[in-house]
Image (cartoon, rainbow, N blue to C red; front, side, top):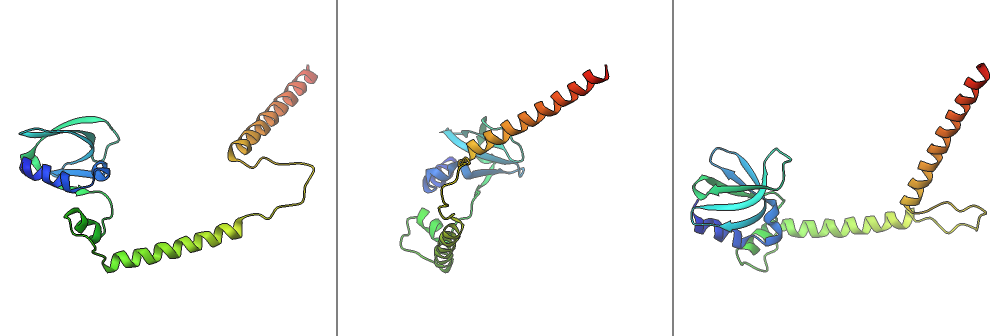
Length: 162
């Protein structure tokens, strides 16, 4: 692949998708792009990671001749792909179907939320925490108290034996 081809492809792909691009090299190695630093005359310099590893933030200097192709690691609708090439107003069956299912899923989610929303209860003498942080804190305090009680009970039994 030549420099001009790489630059042209990157111009077509929206910038928010750049971290989802993989370079597939001639030897079938995969390099995941985080951010492109420079398109030099003989190579591209970018930050990323090798496919199959968790080592992020590595610098790569890849000669254009070693790049076999790019891969966008996300599901791309045909309308989105045509939009990258300047074609507007294209809506295919997949786009129409996904729009219909998204509306249906949103309606179902709203029904679930409405069904799961607790009705206001009568005022009670004890109020329990409602937010997750308070609940977690209360659970942790209960476990610490239980552990201390069991340790104190064990210590008193040992003292009685002496």
